[in-house]
Image 1 (tube, one colour):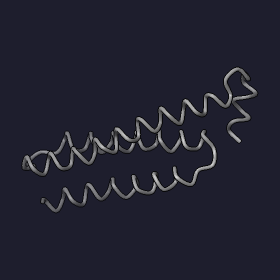
Image 2 (cartoon, rainbow, N blue to C red):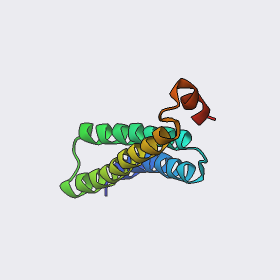
Image 3 (cartoon, helix red, strand yellow):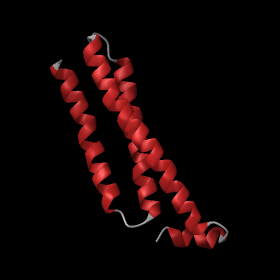
Image 4 (spheres, rainbow, N blue to C red):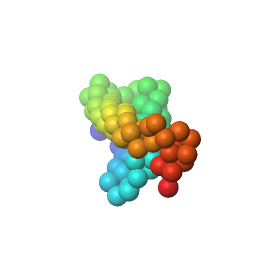
Length: 103
């Protein structure tokens, strides 16, 4: 595998791991939603970088895209679920309920 590709994947996998660990120890749905949205942004940057990369072998490209898309899918699904759970906390309580859910 290309050494530059390995370094680039590590550059995105380390923040991804930290984000999932932070998600695991978060106590509020608002914070979990925020970490998931950050995960979507990181995975989108990773995918953008892979799409712009030239000169990769098919095996390297497929492996890198598989890792990136797995993280992207997990971040999107988790963001949707945690936003839905967070929304249930302040649904029907208006602006005050929304602000209280951020504490």
